[in-house]
Image (cartoon, rainbow, N blue to C red; front, side):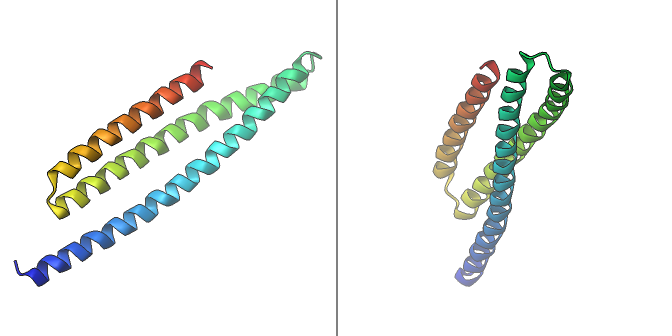
Length: 129
């Protein structure tokens, strides 16, 4: 391949990476919105639990609705996170292949694995709390 062709391939890889990063950023924004909604609903749950001391039947209906939504929402959030992580790894691998630098891929993979482990530990802590 000529240097011109190689440069064209590199630019195409960069454009593809930019498009995929934009999709990842949009997914991250959706995740942030879902997280904020979950926090609001958890605050509502705390308030509903405080009202339960008074024995209000509305509390039971509100709690059931929240728990149903919460279970579904947590599963959706987890799926979004897994898809986002898979997309990040795919983008990193493509970028490294385009540059031909296996050493960078190993460092990125190690960092990603550490980040995933931290996130999983944080989720476990959230669930156990």
